[in-house]
Image (cartoon, rainbow, N blue to C red; front, side, top):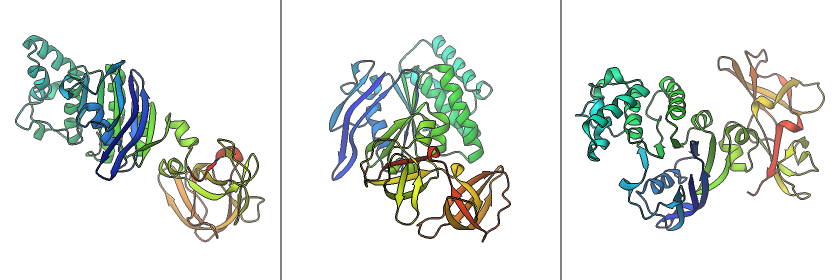
Length: 349
C-alpha cells in the first residue's frame, strides 16, 4: 500500500534520513522504532507532507504522494500532544475536520456518533478536554483522526503522555481499534515494549538508517545487527571471532555456543547475543558454561533478574528465571546456554 523508496533528508550537516526504503501493507500495524534523533519522526512528517525529502520517492496505492499537499493526502496524523481544541466539546473536536470539508450536517452527526461509539466515548460527547482523563483525551484524538476515514493513520509517540497502567490499557485499545476500523496504522515510538505489543512488523532505525525490518518475535529472537541486538530488549553480548558453524571464539572464555545467522569467514570479528531468559544458572562445579559470582537478585513479580559478575566480561551477565530465585548474592555459579538459543552475527555491521 505504502512504498517508501530511497528517502533521504538532511538538515544542514545532520543526516536525518539516509536512503530509507520500506513497504507497508494494507491493514498493517507498522512501527518505526528507534532512539531519539534517529529519523523516525522526520519520516513520519514526510509521509504526512509536512517535510519534503532531498531525494527518494513515496507512493500510496501506486500514486505519487510527494506532489500532493498535506491537506489533500488521504492520511491523518495524530500528534504526540493530541492538540485538542480546549474550548470545544468532544463531539465538536471530532467533527471539526468534517465541518471543514463542508459535509452535510446529518452525515457529520452520524459519523461522529459512530466513531465515538467505537472508542467508547459516546457518554462524554458534550464534555470538554479538560474534563477528561489522559486516556480519554487520547481516544478523542484518535476519534478525530479516524472519523475522516483516512487510508493511513500516522501516530507520533501516541502513548508517551500516559502513565504506565493507562499506557498498557491503551496499547490493547489501539490494537482493537485498528482491527475494528481496518485502517493502516504507522506508529513512531522509542518504547520497545510498545512496538512489540502493537505492531505486526517493526522497522528499527539508527542514525537515519533502517537496521532491520521484521515481525516482533523474529526481531527479538534473531537480531541481525549489533545495534538491534543491543537496542531491542535486554541482551548479553560477547565479542570474539567466528569459530566454525556453531560457536564464537572468545579470548577470555574460549568457545561459546551460538548459531550464526549468515555465513561468517574464518576468524571474522563476530558478536554473540543471548537473551537473559535463555541463560541457565548452574552450580559452580557443573560442566560447561562460564564461571562467575552473583552480584544482585531482583524480583519483579513472576520473574527474577539475577546479575552475575563474570571476570573478563565488561558488563554483568543478566539471567532471568521464573518466580522467586533461591540464589543469594555472592554465590559462585556458572552461566551457560544452548547453541540454538544464542545468535552470532558480524561485529562490523
